Length: 285
Image (cartoon, rainbow, N blue to C red; front, side, top):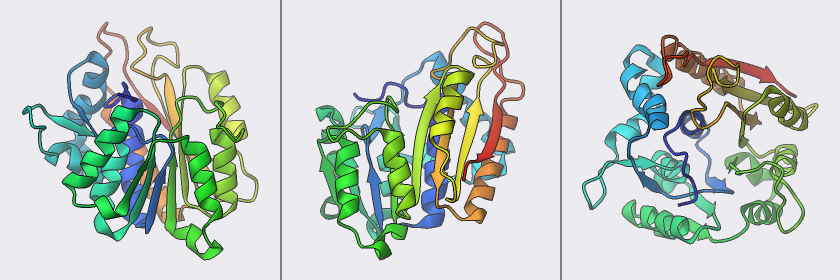
């Protein structure tokens, strides 16, 4: 399993953003660099209790979250053959939101994840539309981008979701360089990034600044990042860089982020320290 952090707070924020962007943009192509598995067995841990389980409890008082495609899928995804509840990965979320109105290029190096992505495509009767590639996602997506006409880029959504933003592909490109290249070419592009201290956050944000392009970062930060708790709920903070999105989409995501933070106003960590979240939208372009 490539992603052990599914259902934790950083994953929750990523999925909320991805589901809403896809539902609004409705791209005819969806590409992902590090797709992970299609679904995961939704077991319990304190990090997931703070993440998806807390969101399920609090969402009824947050209208934008309650109506989100992500939460809809978490609630309706059928259990696995073993009867265990399942949790959707980002690629499964995209398949559920877009269905047969899109084609898919999903990359991962983990063979178990690759097999599970193919299983999700079969479950949803999308096999002919889904290309699952066991390959370097950064290089594969960049190469595929060169084959598109300029007219096709605006209808191709890309999610870049690396484990390490500075890890380089076989072609020498890292995730932030791929984000910049795709954004400049006109692709609606998202890049998820996590951090555990402010210096790391600021360094990533500096590299994600693309002058002259409509680019934002939408961040949630936990009490661990602020030094109010010694418990790290999976990530101290995280953001989604967003390029070439409409102002209406950005406004909706800002509303989503503020409602998510409000859901955690009274949250506590297992040791009784604050579990409050903070949300920030920063224009980078």
